Image (cartoon, rainbow, N blue to C red):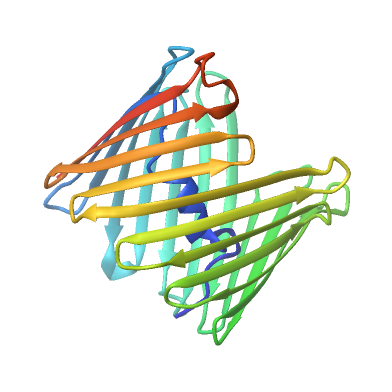
Length: 282
């Protein structure tokens, strides 16, 4: 099994702090699949403070005989997204893709070629945007050996002939423990720990420090599986912000998530946020 992509390093800990929380939103997600294999995903949310409503519709169709995946997406910002990807056909573990966006109201267009290759001990990702004035080349690589992971990510601006990103990461992973450390552009230092304490309890820790500003962030979070249909989440950071979440599977294909963010420094002043999300799948 290939190592994870550079962007997925430390994902287990990030999910502890990110998944299951929808502060300040009313959210609805619907997923379905036709007998012919076309997947439809509809998502929408309303911001409780601004009242702005955002929605999107995504269709995905896989042609397994050719390793081909076609993805189309439209959102209420009137932006169209298209991706065509081919995987494991030219070479086992190789994925080639082209993605593009188009905004009809402004005429803005973007395009990007993407290449990903995964092997037993290495994962390589690269993409190049379509820009005649000088494309931006992004590349990353992760090496894995007996649980140890080492990654490097860079971006090269061909228009100005200089590196714009220089990130390093080092980690160690086992079945129930993940350690991740990273240095971004020599200025931001971060680390995370994920521990699966039991079949029901997952715990995560995040720490980051930025040189120059001496800005330090620290967070502790956990997820407890009450039973096969219900889960409880909680997290707290050094700014005294407390997040709580409760997820309940009402029936097959219907999941309700309730969450709240409490400002511990201004508890009596109010301004706390709540979130409600409903997920439907058929």
